[in-house]
Length: 263
Image 1: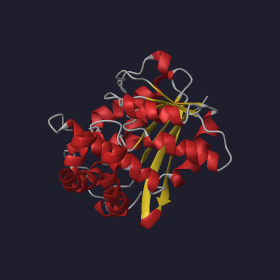
Image 2: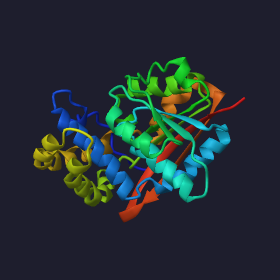
Image 3: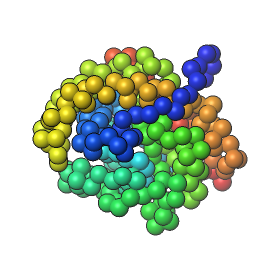
């Protein structure tokens, strides 16, 4: 990337605050997954992800920091839409969402499974990591640089590759394409959520108020290509790294960053 770029700011998101009500944090995570799905915002990511899987020859994906699991479900559906067999995604998170993930597994047992216990992305158990590529979508920006670098290095320790993606590059205006579908998702989510529906319904005004802040801050926290490459530089020539962008509706543009083990 070239030209002027805003500095990265490690500001807070309500979604990350332990002090925030659980129903609020769940609403923010679930609404984002619904917005990604309904707005087809990851449709353009399917092709580079498929190319990544083909290059690594992997059929199993360890989904790190999976949140509400939306990206895995969306990518599986996009693979089928293109006439391809999707990989098998194993969803993990330090704060797992087993109720949400179980509904996804019931819906698509061929492509979706999960680990109900917390999984630390900086210390992936060998049994989970063996033979699986790693996927980190819309999550790396939540981590400060030392922790983000540790997650990437851990993802590369034994796996054949790692694929990172974010819904935008570092520009606050890039959040605007998310707002129409995001607002709709917040309004509908309480009726579709697997738990705490009444609490989430009562929190709709608060969720609508804080979601724009979280989205705005996310655009200031995402890592640039140069920062990502600096994080993985200690791995030397053992991985081949690639960077690209993908489009979605209303002028949206996200980025992907992948590493494939060589030799």
